Length: 112
Image (cartoon, rainbow, N blue to C red):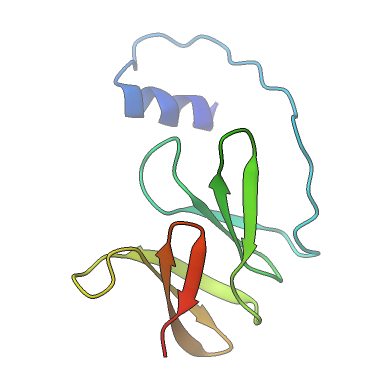
């Protein structure tokens, strides 16, 4: 029900509470530890960072999801960043270090 309420808050339709029926469309093994999903913006079509024993960027393509492996160490925290020098950045903590990635469409480049 939380997802439905979040969707209603995004669309402004908070008055009606209609049950939502979901069905599983795909399963993909992304790690052995529990995953944390972090959206990169506040919209229903946002790209998502998955934090697990391996970190992934999930972005929607025309008819599927694209999975991009983004880190060699397990990441513990992640947030999107935006500045003049880095308009589509991803800042994350892995191995007690702060990492900055620049996301340019489907290509992810580490900043050195």
